[in-house]
Length: 409
Ligand SMILES: *Cc1c(COP(=O)(O)O)cnc(C)c1O
Image (cartoon, rainbow, N blue to C red; front, side):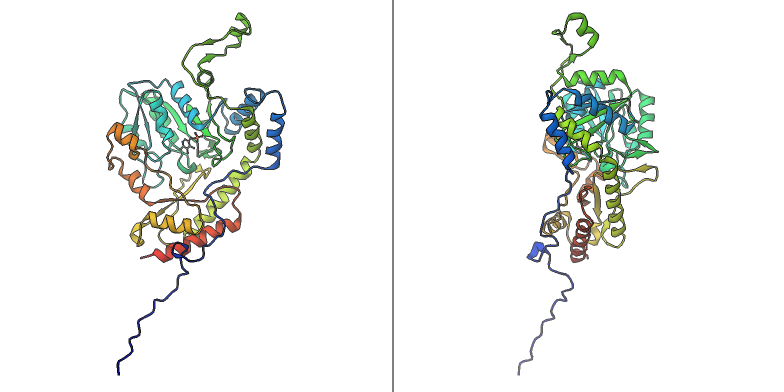
């Protein structure tokens, strides 16, 4: 008689991943970011639509004053996007062909592109291995007589080493343009970002802290810089009211090459309404971050973001890092598995120098910024926006447990 061969059945302690046909944790897709627009915001926009001014009317100054007040700056100048605001800041800093500015490779390409718009050369400096913020020592080594500006990015909403950068700026006569598009409401040593660097750039894209549809702003304490920013926003036309009065109301002078980077009154009305929820939304983002950080303590294979003790992040993103040595697969597979569970994870960022345009133009081949490049292989941004409910975040944590335990070594 033949002995029966009983194959050892796999112990199925894991529920089947949605990626392999199992039931997803959620039926509805949870995005990584989403705007929160209430009825009063809609009414505020409708009111502008019924008024005489839908652009370049009274809402511009009102919104600018509100933004300046919320960050503690003397001036705010609003733009049609965060990218336009970065471009204007690069212009106001007198960034020109033949000059250089230094930034992090771990950012959205717009941070570096604004230098190219001005004909200047972007120089990258690697990030710190813990916070993934641009490393001041790496920056200091790249300062040359051609360096004009440093553009630190408050990655994920954690303020960059602003004290160190302001000191470098004083020593070398540089302009600090802080890309705080992730960091509206963040504090650094008790001060809000927007009141620290020479110019601070914000974005009002729907995934950011407040939205105007598309929009952005530069805040500064320097009135001359604010004047140059306003001129750049409007074709380089000088709006000196004294001059206009002197020459009659029809007269204006285009004195520099600017752009149409104006924000509308429609957008500003939305932004003003959004600002009223800023503090509550920041509190919600911080509560979500706390919940994630607590949950990650018993989720092997995932490292939470590092937070310095002298800052309060604004948590635009909650980027976790995969400990790849503890996993059977790479980031790609984990990402796809979480997406299949209907968890809208994302990746921030593909290092800028690795984009085809930068490779072709500057000859980057990979390997130039090892810390940022290694981080890129490990990073996954978890959903993070104030409209997330308690059950939404528990779904994310449940999906992480399911996926991570499945792929654990
Ligand atoms: C969002 C963002 C920008 C650009 O802002 P837009 O308003 O989308 O033009 C620039 N830098 C970083 C790091 C961003 O995340």
